[in-house]
Structure formats: structure tokens, C-alpha cells
Length: 121
Image 1 (cartoon, rainbow, N blue to C red):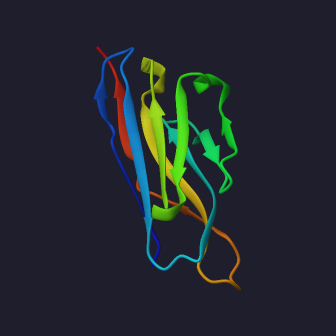
Image 2 (image 1 turned 90 degrees about the horizontal axis):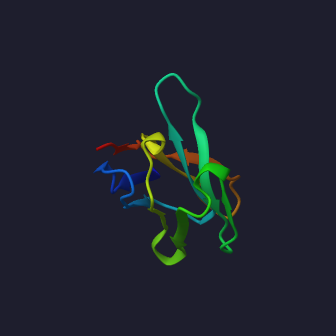
């Protein structure tokens, strides 16, 4: 059973910083892309940032220059460093990973349970 577990959310003032972490555990052969998405009530989940196993990154325009995604392939972890946070960054943040369980299996999407980030004074 593969699990993604996020940590690091919380309440922060505008202009502040937070670092989110996500660890994938279980029987895993390989992980391709990993990423962070966010969702606010009444809206669709949206992409925040992704990173390939080779380190290529992609960001939503709204977070470019403020957020940095990174990963530790040896530990099956992905991180999101969030700086200059704005109230509009308030959302539940979800970790995502494309995982192969065995050498012959297909890649499948896995999601974490989400962690709340609230930016407010």
C-alpha cells in the first residue's frame, strides 16, 4: 500500500514563509513526476508546481519567483518552499506522485490527504 503524507502546513502572516514536505512510503519501484496542487472550497484543484525525476520543474504563473519545488529521490520525498505568501495562497495543498509499484506495472497517480495553508494577518 503506497501512502503520501504531507506535513508543514499552518497559519502564516502575509509575506511569510512555509515549507511543505511530502513523503511517499510503501513498496515502490520508481517515482516519475512529483508535484503539489492546491484547492479552495468551490474551486477546482489547481497545479502549483511539478518536478520530474531528473529535476525539471514547472510552476503555475501565480507562484513563479515565490515558490520552489525540490525532491530527494533517495528518500522518495518532495518539498515546496513557499516565500512571500499572499492571502490568495490560502488553500489545502496536496502532494501528488506518479508511481510504479513494480518494474512491469504501469505508472499510477497517488495523492496525499492534504495540508491546510492559511495566509492571514
